[in-house]
Image (cartoon, rainbow, N blue to C red):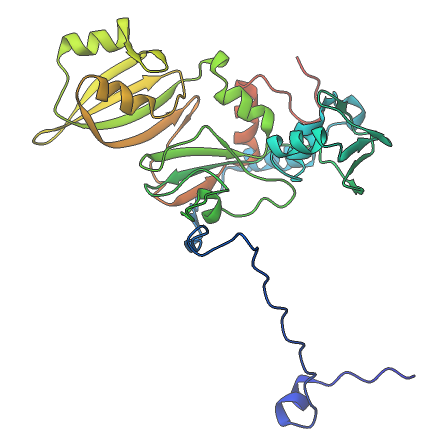
Length: 329
């Protein structure tokens, strides 16, 4: 049977050829236990605009190009926990992978895997009978800075269907964005996202005590004794002692006062709860810095900026992480 010659667009337009009939789309099957009340429609989110900056000088451009081309020899990559490797490869969340491993749905080199098992680039991993091509951190990670707005959540799964920062940001082609520390729905400001799980750990783990800086607007004000108490003695919250590293008054209008505060922890709503402990209500909270990264002056609310490779290399140096192709110190 001979293949029919495909018709041109002009033939379709002039009516000399008939367009093939399209098969009707299959109806979407609703789960039996799913109702409109239990699963509200997802709020539509507009994509964030990228901050356009002037091209760096030629020296930085050359270094950035070299850094993008460097790769780490896979044979020198140390084994990592199975659930971590699967999550980093986009198979699912780490908790979900742990559950799958416990259920016996994951195998390594033909044997059923267990929690605590590690994998290296030479290993063959199968999930539910399907071979998985694991992704390894053999190249420079990506880092973006996003000016989070109030009303956005820092989560991919939300039963209430609220707008997530991940709905606004561009997709990472070969990996997935991971937020370095969260901001609650009513807090805005600097949110750092990266494709490197190790960098997330270096920023966010309490043992590293990385400073977080905030601009805080409160109804009322603190006296000198209260400011001394917050930095020297701290206050006891329901989850333990909390204190500020530094606090500085920034002025204000009327009954509202602004303060610049620095903390070294990332507990849930910690800054708000510290002020509430003293009877003050936080009316606005903006994160302005996290570790070596500050909120760029030109970055507007709802915009993002991606660090160039040279800037990413500087962050890795601060984190004491090796560059692709170099040996770990």
